[in-house]
Amino acid sequence: MNTAESVKTYQIRTFGCQMNVHDSERLAGQLEEAGYVPAGESATPDLVVFNTCAVRENADNKLYGTLGHLRPMKEANPAMQIAVGGCLAQKDRGRIVQRAPWVDVVFGTHNLGSLPVLLERARHNSEVEVEILESLETFPSTLPARRDSAYSGWVSISVGCNNTCTFCIVPSLRGKERDRRPGEILAEVQALVAEGVLEVTLLGQNVNSYGQEFRDRAAFSKLLRACGPIDGLERVRFTSPHPAAFTDDVIDAMAETPNVCHQLHMPLQSGSDRILSEMRRSYRSARYLSILDKVRAAMPDAAITTDIIVGFPGETEEDFEATLEVVRQARFASAFTFQYSKRPGTPAAEMPGQLPKQVVQERYDRLVELQNEISWQENKKLLGRTVELLVATGEGRKDAETHRMSGRARDGRLVHFTPGGPAVDREVRPGDIVRTVVTYAAPHHLVADGDLLSHRRTRAGDNVEAGLRPKTDGVSLGLPSFGAPAAALSTTSGCGA
Image (cartoon, rainbow, N blue to C red):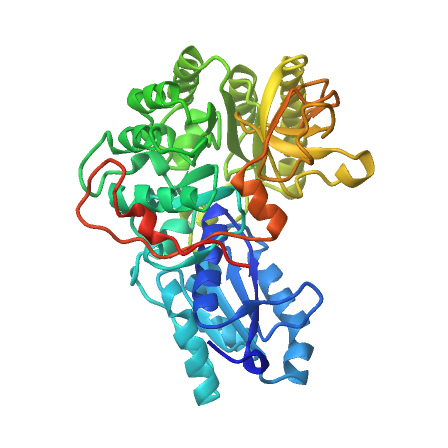
């Protein structure tokens, strides 16, 4: 370990999806093993790492604009290092250094584990290091991770994607799907639970296609069921499944495994079968809606959310109306709505019929208005309902002025609540579990302003109060198997400051 005088500080800035957030946890774990410590909020770090996204059209502008702001800081302190990784680095490669020659290291999505070595090499040689691999060098799960949350953790079950959606650049940047072995996944889950984590979210580009690599079509449902007996694991979520690979055994596993939450986030993208075909989405609207019917038959309380793209090339008013009709029938709890964004290198970017901005904006506004009304109607059905909340950190922007706290219900809904009443044990903390009654509904959140019905202090809450975050070592076990590996508890090294 470095001496106090020579300890280097780091800051990671993450753009993009949950995969990037989890990758940043891995980057933080490696840097701390190499002797770095997190920089204070007001301090100037010795190292700034950008973990980038390439999905949205303005991703390039966002990165290069931020790098431009750092240039004077770098010129004033040449020993400071700047590293750029992630999807945009995989795409732009050496172009990053051409546009921002003050960057020290560029690394891709396939070599997260190279960052400490590349930083040291750049420092020693006093020159930029660019390393972009074409395929996965080390599965990210074998790398240590400094977790962002004391109560909720990401667990990647696969990387990459085998689909060829015409609007998406991810497969070309993250490669073909690679599945982790079930025993490794369960070992990581148990390592998190041993640290006090109550909730895990299983991650994959197409999470429910898990098992293709070792030819087990039921692998994902088996994995959900295998999470059930893990003592201390209270909530299991997953994101994002693909409708084409969604099978009845997954619905059964969700309904029959007590700690699997009745929440489903499943991208629709469009309600027009013609547009779905142009997108190379291998399902149609009737198939999508039939899945929702089966989910609700098995779990009437399920909250279903989605992603929708407005303004895909060639989308007509008739196509858009088909999307609105599916939204009316689906009755999503909420939806992430996007205006189509042209990405160089994707087939859709070269398609005829690119729509004017004003047309896309007008359709987008109509979709948002419709979905907001549906979300509000669905939330009002929960008035007077008792909900169990995992208390969260920083979910409510107005919590300080309203004297409320925020938490997530088991179905994923955001609830702002009053942390008072005789049931409170000392004080309510993020990571604790409370039960309360919904008193008000808005389109994007619920409010519970009565006394708490119950409050359970947890080890996660203890860790939040103490300022501790879990650190997990890399997990790598043997052949595929299901069950709780006996070696799992040895994969954790305890909470760190």
